[in-house]
Length: 196
Image: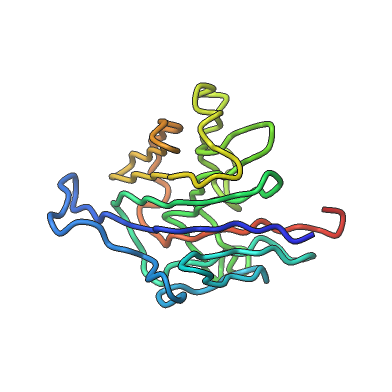
C-alpha cells in the first residue's frame, strides 16, 4: 500500500548571527515544480500537485530525500505538512551527503514526523549518525501537538549551536549541539518493505 506525505508553504527566514535580516521570509518552494531541489538516496516519488509537494512511498527502497540545492546555517524554517496515521517521516536540516560518508547517505539533524502511538513528532533525531538526540520523553506535554490527518505547522529554529522545534505553536525540543553548523534542508519519505 502506498503511503503519502504532503508538504506546503516551505518558508525560511535567514539569520545573520543573532540578528534577523530585515528582508523577511524566503520561500524554498515555488508552488509549481521542484526547482532548487534534488533527490538523494531512495526511489520514493516526489511530485507537485495543486501547489503542494507530495512524497509517495515505493516498496523495497531505502529512505528517500528531496533536498535543497543550497546549504543553510542560521535560520528559522516553517513548513506545513499533512501526514497519514501510518507514515513515519521527517524534516532534515543542517544535513549532508558526502561520497566518503556511507556512500553518500543523507545524514544530519531531523525533526521527527511520528504519527504512531509513541508520538515523538517534533523530537530531534540524528539521521544515519548518532540516533536520537531529543525524544519527547523529555517533553511529554508536546506529544499531542501533531494532528493526524490535518495540516500541521512545523517550525525549526537554528541559531549557532541552539536548535529548537515547535509543532502548531507547541514547543517540542530544545537542543544545544554543534556537530553540524550548516547543511541542506530535506523532506524525507521513510523506506518501506513488502510487509508494510
